[in-house]
Length: 199
Length: 254
Image (cartoon, rainbow over all chains, first blue to last red; front, side, top):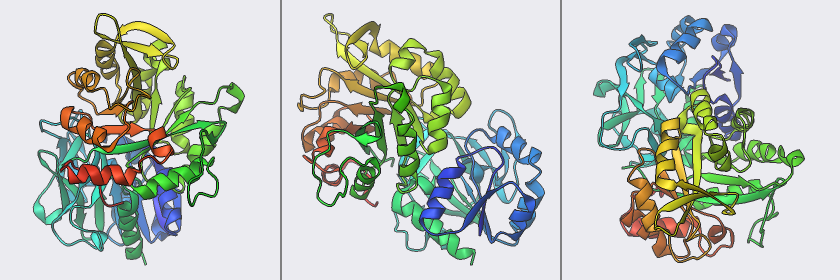
């Protein structure tokens, strides 16, 4: 069972719909006990970094997420990916979950912000989530901030005038800057791959 | 590189697709979920539902349409038509819509755009602008399907809605709409010049070359069509293959 973490931010139902569609059992939850017995966790998120961290803290789930992430696969999506990093600089400097070293900063480029639409994945370090996904496959992004981290954590990036980390990983912690639940067959395949890791 | 998006639009009335004709392989041509799935299989990058339900009592039918579609189609879903309140936004977003498009309601109550952007984020607030050439050569914003000329300058309005928090502009040329003579390049360039959010081109497409033209001659980020796709004059797949052959970046994997 995959726990979809409900902390008040994010489009939980889109993720739930996608998991239902591919036949992965999942549960939307804010109960630490459910996170403990889950086989994997998904951390969604839409909005701003400081709000998300505030809500995570007030939900009392920070410790259990960090502990369980050492034992089972965790996938952060969009803002849920960003809060996996050490810190964010949106509005104010905020500490993140620090499961992947790096910071989350405003995208600096000459193109329109937010970076919105389908962009190509360029693969770097080997990732189980990208098994069967071709180089240049398109996924759907909507964001104005991006992760700054070192190459050892970048499984795929995308080109938007700057190289934006698209899929990051540190052992069993994964983060997708894009929305796999809104990226057609490619996105569903990535979620299937994640589901495979939980068994 | 960011892909240019191709977006089919389905007109929905009382929960049913209107103007349904016989599609090969579709069990029910009036079923919005079936139609959305078909577009999804053709490679549609997003799907727009335009709700043209006339009566207030039947307005919740679109919520069910969205809820059922979101269980089977995994690309962004946008809903437009008849959205007037924050409560409407909430209902549709909860049902699984990713973006909400407002048109007349934004003109009548610009604060709706600001409030929705503040509450749900700019990324889900699309402002649809219907524009028509005025006698002096400028573009005016029209509402109620073109029946009312607001007298408002469309370029000014495009800037204003961005200031209020719109995350995307869906621009329809009322001069080009229905002509099949091509997108309104002049209008698009006027609006794109002042836009720091994505602009979706709508109205006038009737041939493959119109899609390549709009992306070669303007900075539009996406192109939307309704009847062209609905009557199968072209498929989404054909349009994307044509754009790909022209060297325009499009998502070719599904």
